[in-house]
Image (tube, rainbow, N blue to C red):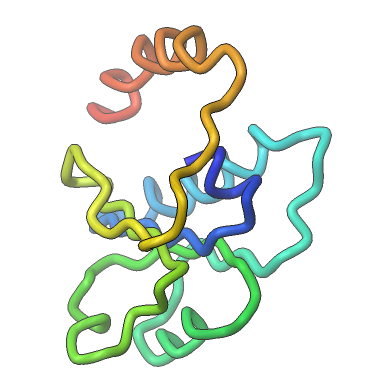
Length: 120
């Protein structure tokens, strides 16, 4: 996820809980500090603005449902992460993302906090 942001992919998070959704999108920006994310960030993207996902700019966005994406052309550079599901839903057909330095250490640290956040 962090590699995708740094490589300027479009990320769309799906979560039914609006508070968790917006917290996740904004937390991702905090992780980037001291770097600044210069592209659009829409913690909760309204269904009527789903066309923004087709913009040429990278973006971080969240939606409460995948339903508005049905019957739409999903951009090839969009990664969809459903928070309710354990796997990444859609991965662009581009080269794989580079692995972060100290990747395993980051995973181990975040694995401790995941159950706490998931149950809140």
